[in-house]
Length: 68
Image (cartoon, rainbow, N blue to C red; front, side, top):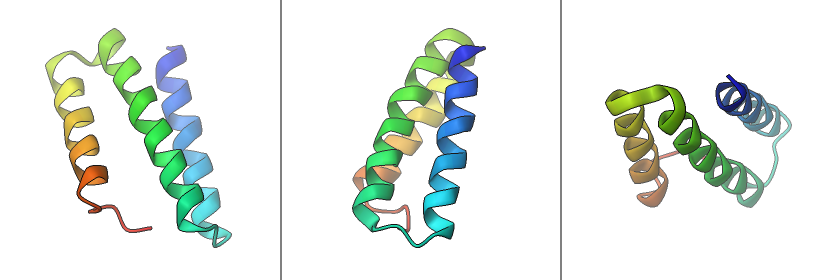
């Protein structure tokens, strides 16, 4: 439960940064932290689907497919 809460809180921070026009470097730092937290969550609760979602998030971040 703690892992899922961390992911949701991180998403809220990212949305807030986006709304306030934060610098891309700040948002990318939060996205990287999100990947770490999502990884922890998938280990505890997510199973194969959670691991796949984290992999896709990592790939999108690595390929700059996430607009910031």
